[in-house]
Image (cartoon, rainbow, N blue to C red; front, side, top):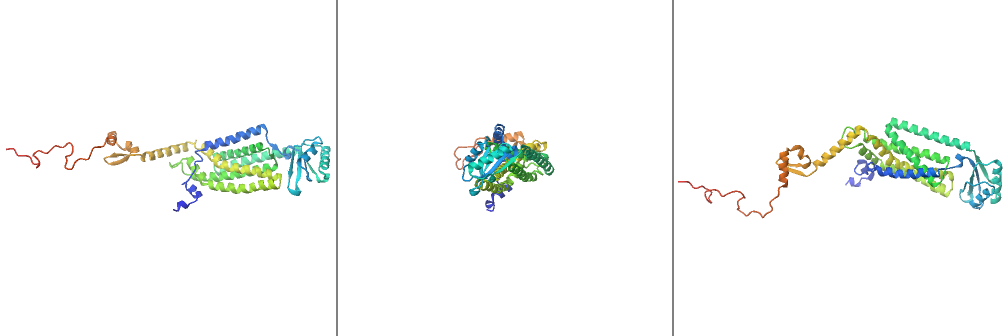
Length: 396
């Protein structure tokens, strides 16, 4: 009765209940492959939408004064400058417009200020123009790429020392998976890639690595002493480790995603803060992808690498041989003079003649006629000489 009351987490940890994550790895690869292919095609066709901080340009921020965002766009376009981005930020009385254009000269900035002030009925002092050079945006891009490369190198070195290089390789592939998935979703959605997005990407890489390390630590514990035995293969021990950490991974992911969802819904949706939207959206996609990759990508890839080693190939053969022997011993019994013997091992312990005799007896038909009458002689026996008394007559 005590086991019936045990929680799912306890039963997963004991191995009483499990899901074959490793055995079904092909379907996880196919699912991730489809998402990655769609994202790569989108990146190749339409690419990312970098913000003004990366590509350079001019930005104008000011009060709407009860006007629509289309009035703002028409005022900017009337000066001969094309509006690239026009949106509102904030709510209520703090609601403002934000317009982004290509890089402008000082005269063009002044002309747009006047057009906006005239169209919206505000003063030029209420408009805040900002100009970002393309050189500064290029420097930010290079710094972000350098930071990512340094991060990946440090991760490889740490995991190689803490675990082994094959675990490091599986973790890096999972990290790249998360990056490509997030970039593909950004490309498909058309959202801007801002410095907040870069910060979020570095954050989700750390989270994905943390989740993978927790799973790998349990896998290393389960596989530490299995090479010399025959109880389970490396894939089976890894699958046990994934199941043992499954509830913890789910709980951690939910707890991490809830505040991020709050940022996305309240900060971006209600308050209209653009930087919060960039940060929260990238965090939400990356955290979900990181939790997925630590279970469905990193661990199966580790098994792909380790099962190629001769040690674990021999282990897999021993486990298969032990399973086959157990299946044979649990088969139907063969009846012998010494008693019943499992059919699976009868060929190993009986001589060919004894085995044939035992199988012949098992195959011989049984008597199906009516039972013999009371007092009837057994078949094949003749009446004893000497009459009914059973005594033979003496010859004279």
